[in-house]
Length: 336
Ligand code: ADP
Ligand code: MN
Ligand code: MN
Ligand code: MN
Ligand code: MN
Image 1: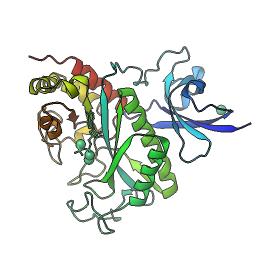
Image 2: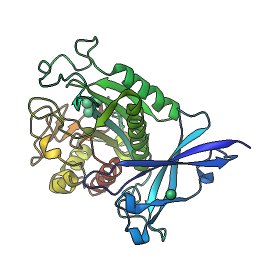
Image 3: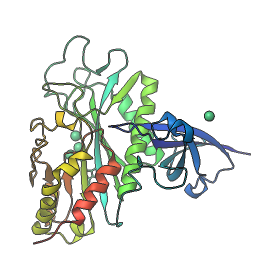
Image 4: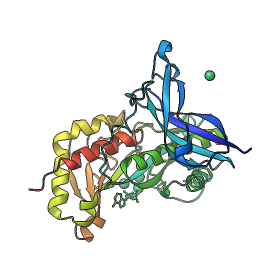
């Protein structure tokens, strides 16, 4: 009889930022297929998802990936349900209203933190590294920290079967990014969360931790975002300047609704400096990295067939919430 490890992953009920939880179950003679992953349950009173008296919450498997660190293991992304089978209020994946035509590319930025100092890699105890400028995409021990870790994470993502597209060192010391692309809002969200899971699990081996706070270091240091690149069938194949402008305009009256689901403490990051627009302003423009929404030059050069980049989501945002809200707004757009 063969024994398989299934690592069930879910989002807890913590506010303002939900965190990852996971636990392992052993299955006999498992097929490797999602439909053969059983429903499971957990103690919701330990994750702010239920009271002690009625503590059972359910885990509904929704996506399966290889576990790159176990020969006979899988990572199973799940949705949290109430004991009666309805979606739990912390389950924002279940609320996504996708029509099947949406593609998403998330750029997940993060800081690699040293457990010993509680500082980003590259920050000396009691002081600061040299000013920003030469760290972004740099090579060499003078400006680069954490490359072994980052490349190992990239390997793990690929072995898991995530559609990770690349990595780069970011503007601040110890700050990195990975990009994941998927067709479908739920699929993209699943992959970002599993990518984050692998990132966090790998830190245990290195004596690091991940800080997804959008502004972990105050002052003249970049914050972390999770730019959301998105398109639907019409934007990709039947686009026009008018279509793209009408979509951008649809975002204008709902700035607050978007910011509400774009991550906690994002006001510290969206200041108008460091390649951001202020949190209380809205703007869009071709190639404009100081805008709320950038129209990539790719889109213009392809005769207005392409995608848009919402630059506002913070590194700690829930990709399910971000993608779900973007679809809602794009659907409301009217071409005038
Ligand atoms: P930058 O750092 O210049 O903003 P990146 O290369 O880091 O750009 O990220 C661009 C993202 O856009 C990638 O994740 C990519 O998958 C995504 N993307 C490209 N084309 C589309 C599209 N048609 N729909 C949605 N996302 C797209
Ligand atoms: Mn128990
Ligand atoms: Mn990028
Ligand atoms: Mn970036
Ligand atoms: Mn970007």
